[in-house]
Length: 139
Image (cartoon, rainbow, N blue to C red; front, side):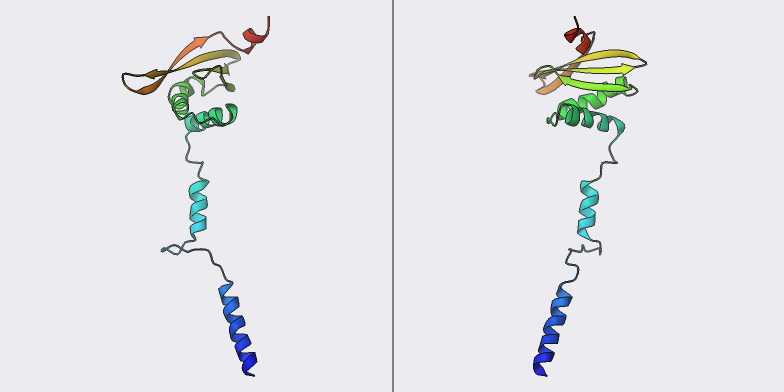
């Protein structure tokens, strides 16, 4: 009988300890849920931020170009925000081309990256150009 009682006590402790072991914050919420909300919160991005994020990460395939992203958000998005198609190509380490289609017309912006040693910052300049894939590949 003692053996049965000891076995039942050990079993009940084992079952009680097999419960939900997720850490609970001081306010009683599950910290795993809070972390998921912090990590997966992409709804707070503006349209310009989403535009630059997609062009730099997906079109340029994941290069870390924070300065370029900021420039795309502030300077390029207001120009091409209503375009039906937009692409970004890297021509060299410091030259990019944004090609977009707006109202049935295809246009291109050449973006050049510079270092300003006086102010110690990276700056970009844009120039409208007729350069595009068609002029490059079709003769």
